[in-house]
Image (cartoon, rainbow over all chains, first blue to last red; front, side, top):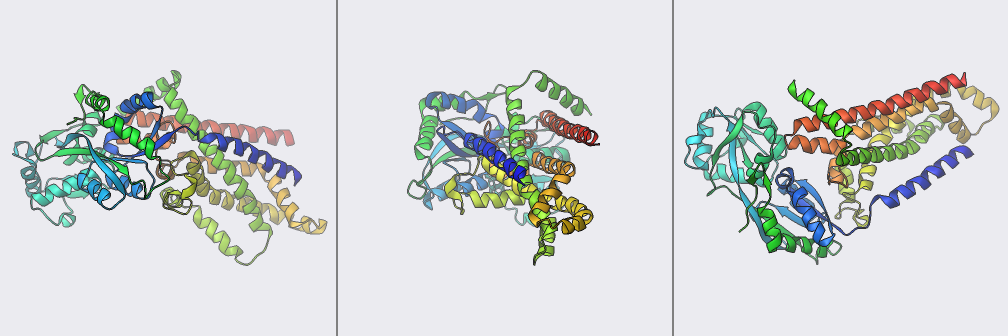
Length: 271
Length: 234
């Protein structure tokens, strides 16, 4: 019995030392960001530059836009970087956020199998392309996860006046997953899907899929940065969050964003 | 399959060149899962034995509960711990979400029922042998528990390993409560998930191979330890 108690005591002391060491007290912020920015390698490029200037560590939690906003509402992030302008503005209007800034943009693209069964290559714009997919009953894979890309896709169907997609079970599918997982599924099933350009460029399992339609006029993809309301969330690291957003919006930060390239292609643009 | 050979080559290159990021992830995986296994065992072993030795109202129900919780889906545990630790939740003040401690809490919740249920089975069969001896020697229930656990130590080691295997291989819980933050809470399984999302299947598979090799090594060591102890005892 004594031996066991000694053992438990020894382990507890060990655990105590490990735990007290486990999370350092370095100034850091939690950034709730979209998977599309993280998957492209954007943060591992830009954050070291920021950390050099300020010595604030940035912990990126990459989830879909809907989830990121929900997490931020719970007070589980110091700063928000997402891509669904209306939701972001709603977030500020509802008193969760204090201010929203335009950070950068690129565009969404329609990707699909090279043989292009619905012939969307020849479509004049994205709405026509979606109509063609609908007419042909060609397989389309939706994110279905309330992310920025998913919301954009739903808006396009709406604009193209195609409704009741949930009953279109033989050609319209929902993955319920992130962009990367959805692309993996689309590639396997020869399905069309809407994707943000940065995820597509850095995606490594393209197989027989390719960009079939780019429609920069209708498919702009705006990334915004949102500061949280200091009165509502007094315990968050607001000074760190402000420093990061100021740095990203500064001349230096903006030109760093412009300089981010994958496979020699610029991923994000600034105004 | 071309991607398997590619993955195998990649795995060996990463290991041979001692890739710093990889080692960091591997080390963190081991650290988190070892700690949660140790805590899970410290709770689970005595719990399993207490259920065997003591008769109390609701004992059968407790057994049923523990057996049910063995099959807890990691995502559900992750979600529960998230709601608990979130700043909007009851333990938000501790600021534990997206930390390694949160991951340890989640994994401990996940494996404690496994350890408790399995050690109950082991201790129960042992108790059937010992019960009369204990009664005739008028041994208190508390010391009976320690005696039983001590005598079952080699089987308990295997149970601990089962818990460890569960902890190191699960992804659902640590993904939610840890957030897969690079250099902070990124472990092998979450790294595999995010590399798959980037379409880098070869790298993901390579990480998977390394994960399996580690589990293989850990189990091999335990097997060797067990065998050598048995021989020295006899």
